[in-house]
Length: 229
Image (cartoon, rainbow, N blue to C red; front, side, top):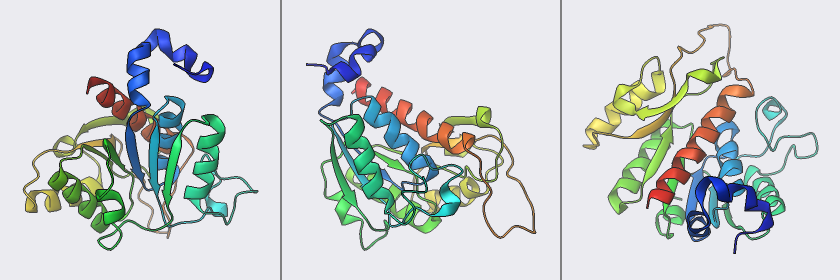
């Protein structure tokens, strides 16, 4: 039975496809500006179980881009606030949270779970490689995100194979490690825009538009793949 909150999705996708999403589990690793918007899209599409992992708390400098960042949530863990938001949107959703950074020590929390899809929204290149390689080893589909900071234009955000990306320093480095691990393809959310280069900055600049677009594109892609089976 499709809930009233999802009723307007039925003409677009059909009841059977939406019922199927209720049985799916998606892990979102990294719940920052990009990952949190992916969670938003997945919850509002009715995915039944979400596994969220992030070791950070919400900070004042998240207010410009993080959907769960308000002056009331500063200092709280991103995973806890996302869980509360998800349950407020869809009381039927099951949310498992891991308030820790994904790395070699914590990866069993994800890899030992029964997951249908993984979304990699990690910033750390080393941890990103660990996640991608581990997902491939156990045969779980994964979508990754490359650099979204220091960009202006949300209309450049697309999904493509990492070996076709341009203007992306993170993707360039990641390709090297993927080749080392004999990974020849990987779908990524990618911004086809050269990042801002300003040697005076000691932080990554961002706006509300590019991370949100990346997260929602990721959610749509994952939903499509889950519905395709």
